[in-house]
Image (cartoon, rainbow, N blue to C red; front, side, top):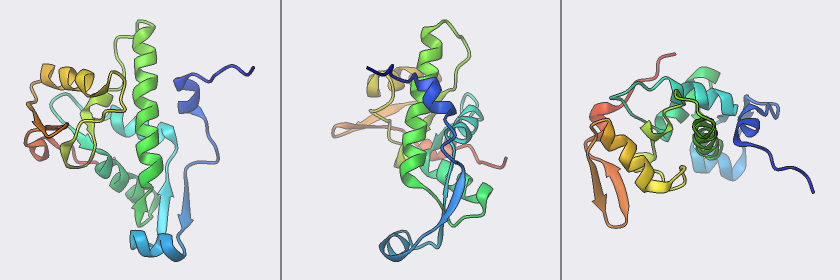
Length: 158
C-alpha cells in the first residue's frame, strides 16, 4: 500500500501550475469570463501568509489576486478553495511538530465572512482563534460569520 502524502507534500506539488486556461462553452457562459488562472498551492500560501493580525481575507479576494497576478479574467474558484484547505492542514501539521509561526489560515474566510468548517478543528477551532485576535463571531442559523468582516479585509497588492 502506498504511503499517504503529508499536507506539506501536497502543498509543494507543482502539477504544471500556475497556468492560465481559456474558457469555452458552458464554462465561459457560467463564469462570464474568457480566461481563468489556476494557481499553485504555494501561491495561495503566500497570499494567506501575507494577512497580518487584525486583518482578514476571503477566498474571493484570493481569487481576485490570483487573476490579477496572471492577467486572467478570474481566479479558479475550485482550486483556490481546495488549495486554501491544503494550506490550513499543512499549517496544522507544522504546529503539531512544534512550529510556533504557521500560516494564519484562520484569517481566510469563505464568501461573506463565513467561517470554514473544512479547516482543521472545524468552525469551533477557527472561531476560537479569531476571537482570540479580537474578532466577534456571530451565528446565523447553523453557519458562523465574522461580524462586520468587510472592515477588516486586507487589500491584495503584491
